Amino acid sequence: MLPPAPVPLDSQSRTRLVFGSGSLGRLGALAREVGMKRVLLVTDRGIVGAGHADRAEAFLRAAGLVVARFADVRENPTTLDVGSCLEMARDERIDGFVGLGGGSSMDTAKGANFLLTNGGEMKDYWGVGKATFPLLPLIAIPTTAGTGSECQSAALIADPISHQKMACLDPKAAARIALLDPELTVSMPQRVTAVTGVDAIAHALETAVTTRRTAISSMYSRAAWGHLMSAFPLVLKNPADLMARADMLLGSAMAGLAIENSMLGAAHSMANPLTAHFGIAHGIAVGLVLPHVIRFNAKSPEARREYSQLAAQLESPGAGDDEEGGVHRLVHSVHIAMQLGGVPPDLRTAGVEERLLPQLAVEAAQQWTAKFNPRSLNVADFSDLYCAAFQPFSMQA
Ligand SMILES: [Fe+2]
Image 1 (tube, protein in one colour):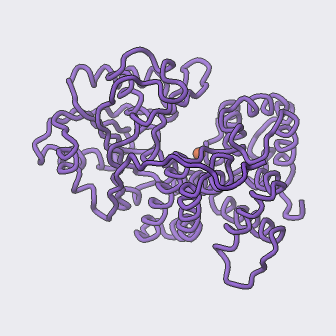
Image 2 (tube, protein in one colour):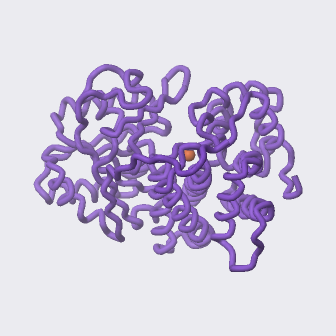
């Protein structure tokens, strides 16, 4: 059950948002504003190949900064990746980080920032508020529209052996500035646009109903939902549509702000074991289970009301005002968006082995996001949800 209103809140925007087409050109001035003189640009080879790293570096140097580049970021960064980045940060005696890329670049920069300023190992920061000393300033520049990491104070770093992701949350780790330039997202391959977009849509939906949701997080969830659902079909149809790219980038950043206040829910709990066992991309894994989680959560009256309001946001007046119908229409909208995003229709098609469903359910129940879901779940509930997602999808369920 959701807590009764009014839900208390303690909310402070820690990250300054700078948004605009071509706003990368402000990077040098912004870095100086937050006191940087020697920066480490943390990025990946794809971003270097797209020319974005060179441009970012040129803007920093033009403003008189000394720049070192760590371009070895890998997807789902581990403690080993953070260690390599830390080594360079130490050698270069930097006083600030710029994370340029997807969530992995920002996570790697945040991870190295924890260790550079507070010492120890990543596992020391697993949990909430474990850092003692301030971290160096970070400017986060997303080149995908999905994770919302640029607006979050969490670093997600995996153990290299178990692949378990450690969520290291600390307000000190939040980026000082999120620089949102939609032009940087135009180079995203279609598949990345689709997968990251699905993830962002899931963030808007999950944050809208968690037990942690507040008036502030709800505002971000609804705004994100509106931006993302209107722009997602457009950006898939025409990748060069800068207005749609801008909506996706704003939507994913707002969903990130919602996560910062509201956390996530059961779809993310179920997605992580799918990624760990079958290598299914995070956005796809979330998308595979999302409609089923919505149906499960809609048995909570508060979640049902919120879902029907999200459905109404997409509709012309008079589409229907009963909450049951609203949930049905929401599941339909989400299902269409998942299809557009290339999410397979069910777990079987996605290559999941049926015999492992019980094990996945045990692991999903251990995920930290499960405890914020509007309806509490036990292993049997997760098992039912995985079984439902394994069957061919039906709007009649
Ligand atoms: Fe996600």
